[in-house]
Image (cartoon, rainbow, N blue to C red):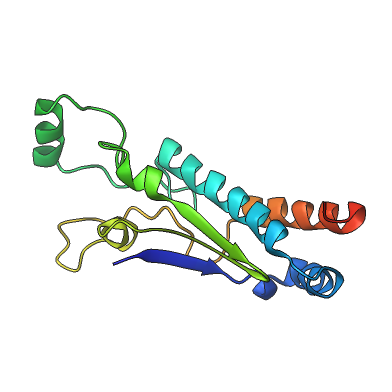
Length: 152
């Protein structure tokens, strides 16, 4: 199982015209999409560091039994970072006109959405209900800059 969220920037009203202009101006927008992907990746990594979801809400606490087990193994650090595998597995894929961000870890979806039996609570790290305002602003600035100076 692979968890991937595709960000269709053309649906964001504020930057729709910019994306359309970029698509017609440049033969290949892959470098721009890579930069957008990097912006999204850094924001997602920041959510791991702050332990907050895309809306800025704190991730749910670990249950006491699991917390004690982690401590017994010598780890009392942040949530979702015991081994660091999920964090390190975050990756972007970019091509002309699109970018996706995701993880190839089987348990990524359980952390993102929670388990159906409720044993794993939702600790969202990828935005699935639209991009946070700060990320929209960063992408807007990135595309504006690229259109103004030309893509290098």
